[in-house]
Amino acid sequence: MGPWRLLGWLAVAAVALFCLYHVRTVAISIVIGVFLTALLLPPARWLRSRGLNRAAATAVTFVGGLVLAGTLIALLVPPTVASVSELRTSVDQVLRDVHRLVAAVGLDDQRLLTQARDYLSGQGGQITTGALAGVRTVGEVVVGTVLAAILSVYFVHGGDRLFRWLVDLAPASARTRLTRTGDLIFAVIGRYIRGVAIVGAFDGFFIGLALWILGVPLALPLAVLTFVGAFLPVVGAFMAGLLAAVVALVAKGWLVALIVVAVTVAVQQLEGHVLAPQIYGKALDLPGAVILVAITVGSVIAGITGAFLAAPVTSVIVALVQSRRKAVREPAPAPGSA
Image 1: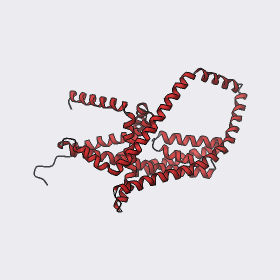
Image 2: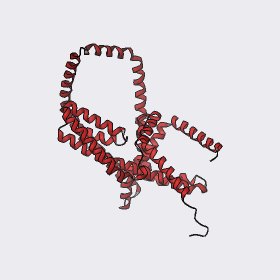
Image 3: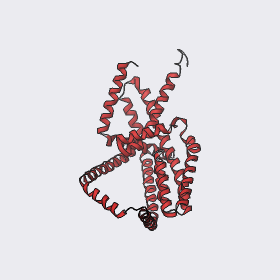
Image 4: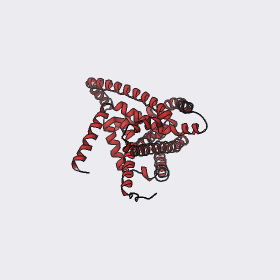
């Protein structure tokens, strides 16, 4: 590739990123809609193979998903409320211990609290501005979530038809390459999303089971948080394990906290070295440093959503590069060969 052509591609990429940044809510909604489609399309296809038409299969799939989500919320709320009430007593005891420790070293914690309150009062304007920005962000999240859900319904119902229509808009010489690229991207996304869901369920089940056996409060919510943290590789697992250890430390003491840390590390090592390679395969085996850099860049570009999307987007890019390299290495078929 010549230097001028390379500069041209860089300019096109810069313009595309600039445009995507200004419509990032819509762009992120489309990406999340594709992710939801990759997760929900297999059961919809299974229902179609059993004789249901597209509309019925799509409706059953999404109604089943909503029922499953509602059931999960109904199971989460009562134990969470009860655990919070139980944890409040432990927190009060910890605060008293901290007060005694601070007094023993000659510090006045009440004075520190007063200084912190005065500082927050002086920063009232900035806090208000941040609150308004937070309200705007929440509004964007709600709009993006609704749009992603609607798009996923449409994609599950007729995404293949939409993709063929888009490919037909391209020049005839590029249609085969676009079709292969689209199939590869969707296959990688599907493997990634389903793999993360399985790995997250594995981590959440065994870590939650250990927390329940040890009598740690918030065991079920922490298990669900561990499942959600799997969608943020490396960082999510670390934060979920840290929070579980902190809750165990506050509620049960340092010995139980150490046991929780040991169980978390053991489960994640088993998942990382045995389960994940079998699920993802070598095509999605990204080094930890690459994942951390991708998550950092994604968080800078699009905040929390960008951090969640960083790993799958990086996996897609790596898969495309590997596919391109493989195509270059393969010799062209000889003339007249069948």
